Structure formats: structure tokens, C-alpha cells
Length: 505
Image (cartoon, rainbow, N blue to C red; front, side):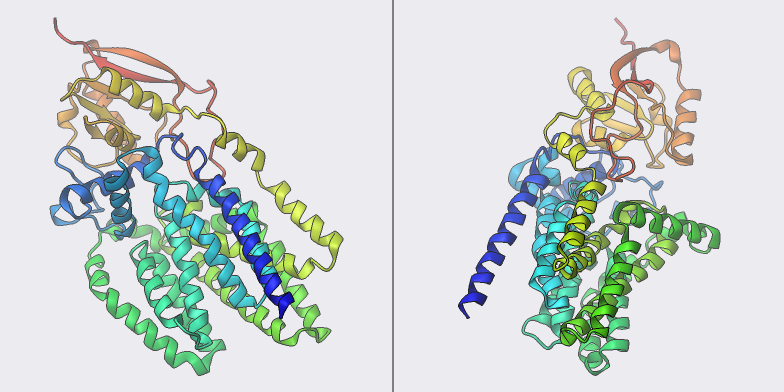
């Protein structure tokens, strides 16, 4: 008994150490890089919560759409995303004020909670403390996880509530105290963080319980039904969203669906080598069964693997059909589960010391950890920071800015009227604007249309160019591991140019 108690104390110490290191990696230099377009949109919508009590796509000065106005309904009420992230962020703004650091703070905190949730889920699924510790240790060195978690966006919320929802579900299966309640609360929070992953979690739970836990199917069905009933009014309200208006065609195009699926799988392989780890885990489970070792734990390992793989597969299928683009960020709720699979493999390999050490070194070698540490300890300067800094120093109250893509951060960091971007608003008030910003890159057809309008309807004789000494990258800094820049961009791109209207007199 004493040995067991001593091990639990060390377990607590090790988990505390992981949380301490994770806190450093999540919060260090968190407010240095300016918000990019999507992050700034989240911050702007949170501001409207403070202004109106609900998130709106228009605050009386600027519009916050990136889909030509399809994201909101009557009264500009926001429908594209569910609202929990906006309300949590609005609360942080109310308490701590508006800043880049505060904008990312609640999402970094949710990411920190993922380590605790992942630990308990892994231990519950695989009945192994060592697998749980190796899982959170693997997540600790996952740079893609930090890139998504250090964003002012819903990604880490979905990670956390998926882990808690699955943990509640497993406890519900085993008829353990609080399992159903946790499943209900986490599922509701997941729905209000992003409804897509709410749907994929319900599908995973239904599949797993129906085929592998038939004797607990009734309990799972009743709790899932209650979960749906609680959120039914929101489901009905969201049903009128104009998503199909923008992306309905791509949801029935088999070529595009297959292309998204291939891209998602390629990204998973590129950053996590998941096929290798899954194959290794299956081999280890089969060998363990053949040797009749730890029969009970082997069954738990297989059951945990089936649940995890089912959730990954269902998400890949749903995202391939419904995602507007095959962006890595849509895989966010899967990242802790990838770490869990790798952690279970490491736990099974720890008795084979040489292979275990080589496996962990392989993980460390594969991650761009030195680059990430450089970002944490150095200043980053991008095009948005240069534009915002210049406008705040030189623009006058009441000035109008006309801009192509990249309008959201300008709206967030200044109090200026900004016309253009991807809002779909009437561009005629932009003619004769006090400031004109036409970025060198083009992000979409919507962006190109705004660019052409501004070029054709501007009397260039009235403007003087101001060149800023920073490369005009299209994004301030993306969360996608393949596009993220850990160092300030060097000149090698055209510089940022702002056009200032000549003032009479």
C-alpha cells in the first residue's frame, strides 16, 4: 500500500512538472505577435458582446464578415460560430482590458487544461498511469499543438471539451460517479465552442457504444438524447445559417471532397507520423495477446484504441465533406488524441529500453523545437504590426481606411472606419478614402474583386505612397505549422505600401 501511495505522489509531481513546463511554453511571449485576420475577427466579435450583449457582425462603425456577410442574420446577429469563445473572451476583456495577450489568454488556459484532461482520459481508457504520463509528455513537445493553442480562436476550447466529453463517456460506460454529468456538461460546452465537433463526438460515442458496449447502449442513448434536447433550440436556430450559400457546391463535389481528405491525411502523417504509431500499437497489442500477458489491460488497450481511431476517422470524413478548405486547424481536437496514441506506444515500449529511447528521440527530432524556442524569446515584427503602428501614429480621428485582405486587425487595433476586406459591404464609400492599403498578395476571388475596385476607382494623383520597411506577407503569422514563421520575415518580398491622401492646405 505504501508503494502505491508513493507512486501516486510521484505521479502528481510529474504531472505538476508537465503543467509547469506547459505553462511556460503557452504563455511566454504570448502577446508579442499581433493578431492576424481570423484572430482579430474573434476579438472584434467579443468586443460586440460587451457593447450589445450578443456577438454581432457590425458594431456601428465596421463590419466583421469574411464571407460577404453570410455569417450573420437579421440585426447582424452572428451565426457562423457558436458563442462560448466570444463570451469567455469578452469576460477577459472586461477584467483585464484589450490587448493581444488578453485576447489569447483564455485559449492558452484552455490548452493548459488539456494536459490534465488528457492525463485522466488516457488513464481511464488504458488503465495505465505510465501511458497517461507519456501521453501528456508527448503533447508537451508538440509544436503544432502550441501553434494552435496560442491563437485567439476556438481551437483549444474544442480540444479541451472533446477530451472531457470522451472522459465523461468512458466513466458513463463503466457506471462511475459523475460520468454522465461530465459528458453532458462537456458536450454542451463543446457544442457552444464549435458545433461540428459536437456532432462528430456524438457519432463516435454512438458507434462505439452500439458495437462494443451494447449492454450500456441504453444509458449512453438517454444521456446523449438529453444532451441534444438541452441544445436543441440552438440547433434549430443555427439551421438557418447561410453556410450552404457559400460552400454548398464543394460539399457534393467528390473531387474536392477527396482532395480535402488526402490533404488532411497528409498533414497528419507529416506532423505526427500517425500511421507508423498506429501500426506499432496494433503490433504490440497483437503480440501481447499472443503471449497472454496482462489480458485485462490488453482488452482495455484495444477498446481505447478503437474509440480513438473511430473519433479520428469520423472527423476526417465529416471535415472532408463540410470543411471549406483543408486547413490544418480543423484537425485541432485530434491533436491530443494523437499524443495519446503515441504515449500508449511509448508506455508499451518502456521495457525495451533501447527502442523506447530511440522512439522518444525520434519524436524530439521531428518537432521544430529550436525554432519554437526562438519565437518564445525574440520579438516578431510583421506587416500588420507595421501598418497598425503607422496608422495609430499618423491617422486622424474620423479618417477612413480602404483596404484589401487584412482589414480585421486594423479594425481591432485602431478606432478607424475600415472599408473592404472580405465583408461584402458597399465599396463606394471607400472612393476617396484618407488611407488606401492594397496588399501585394491576393487571398481569394473576394479579395481580388475588392482590389480591382479600389485600383479602378482611385484617383492616384491625390495619393502619396509611404513605404514601410517590412515585407508585405499576406498573413501576419498563420497557425498552420507549414506556414508559420518563427522569426520576423526578412526582406525578399515587396515592402508594405500605404497610400495617404494628400490633404488640402
